Image (cartoon, rainbow, N blue to C red; front, side):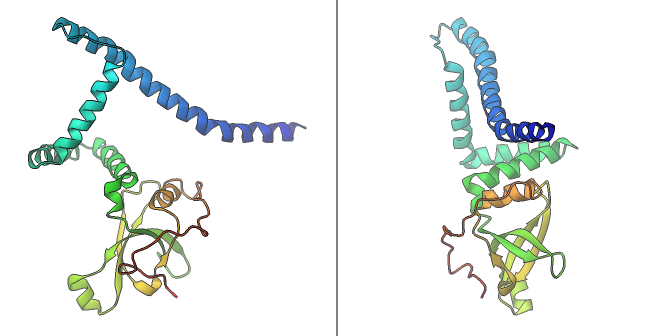
Length: 216
């Protein structure tokens, strides 16, 4: 009876914990932004006779994010943010945290999807052992000319920090294409294999045939 209760309790935690933590984080972010900014922004704006209303802090935060994105799209903004990146990446310890969060966030957004073409499986670091990797592009230039083979460039991430890894050049026929998405593959790597992707065998995504082909 005790083993059953313990099993039920652990199962309940596993089911409820992700939902509770998600709600908690969203609630914490909302209360932090709304509670701290609403009062301070309202006091600041009322000094200048500006009318305030409930939710103005969230509107301002949204506007700041939107304006930041607009700045990052032009030449001057890119130079400013590049300088900021350079400064932050020179600070010990903080730079590792910053780079990890930056790369992971890009991987889950549209920009990084243009870099990672597909999740793949390769034999690495030796024959008989397989690693999840990400296809970046067809290998070209001097490397392709020297090898005289149809090669693909793949990035093998490390666990649990996928921002570090190895760039490998693999023959096309040795690369196994996976149906899982880039996000699912990243979750698999970051979790050390604990989080497994959904079965997508019946819903394989289209892959540009000019870039890659499934090995026979």
